[in-house]
Image (cartoon, rainbow, N blue to C red; front, side, top):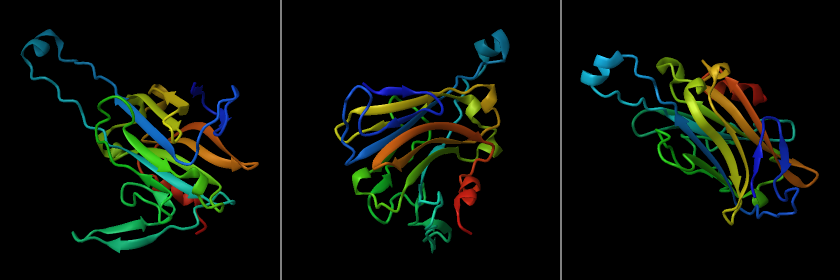
Length: 227
């Protein structure tokens, strides 16, 4: 049975306190969320004659940062030019995100981008061949950001049922950390959700849940680089 974590709680990913063991050859980190239903403030006649309100689209992005023994992202990748004239930074480095979805090692990748949070289950997934990951990577930090959250006045105070969970290669859920938006998350457009880290030859999973005002993971990444 999966463990429902609270903020700050840490568990061993391989084996829980009930003696249940998990296969970490491939671990799926699933993230999901719902957007709170907005109250209709138009009154009775507005409800009767007004057009139905279209639900706002929230584009939440999952990010994974691979850290070394110093707690830093050592490889920031490179810049590449795209066919449409854009420049992508951080390409094929130790940050897995929407513009660089697969690590050069092939051992960690992002499956795709769900722009609405609609439906049950995971909205985004990061898959890791945890047993194959190079020993130089001591920690993996997971963030979620709301794309253009500042400009669109979208924040985690308006997000319901957000979660991050770890599932082993056999599809067994190991642990889950859930949170729902409240006033303390108003104006917060990104979240450091959880981390995996090595300790005494084992992988640990820690629920973090620290919100940030910025809607760009780069602001947190700057704190984790050598330059």
